[in-house]
Amino acid sequence: MAITRDKKNTLVAELAELFATAKSTVGAAYDGLSVANMQVLRAAARENNVVIKVVKNRLVRVALAADGKFDTADTSLLTGQLVYAFSSEDEVAPAQVLAKFAKTHPELRLITGFNSDGTSLDTASVKALAELPTKDQLRGQVVSVIAAPLTQFLGVANGAQRGFAQVLSQRAEAL
Image (cartoon, rainbow, N blue to C red):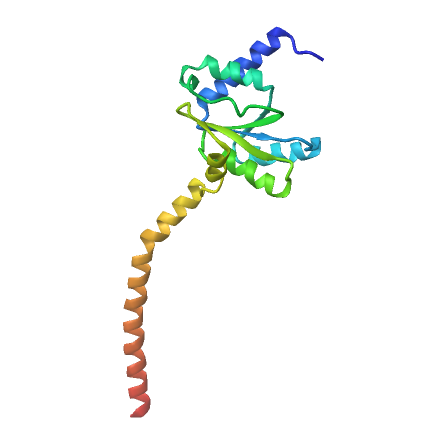
């Protein structure tokens, strides 16, 4: 059943808004993925504040053309059936959600992506983006790096006190 022109215009406006507010967008081919698996993907995406859309590539091109910052974006990789993941909160979340799902569902393949500044990403760039740590993981790494010297200092300070106490207890036993 064909979509009416009004519905297409509404969909293009919604896509243009998603592209404008997204910190990153990733497109993945999903040939052979069942409806049940797509529902699992959508649930995983919702948990990570990622919006999943399945739309025709032509409508995506029209939505990208509506925003001036995507004028130089390469849309040559927008072929076949693609699912698009958008995130307005985290730059790596769309790529990570799709890559994690693709590990257990080889039918899903990362294809392309777009940054918030309007540049397009090739497949290798999207895969590299998916391997980056999340913001929470980076925060944890920074905290552990900051806390490491203090932890080591406290270990040394406690070691000296513990050694002194052992020497006193051994001396007391010897007397």
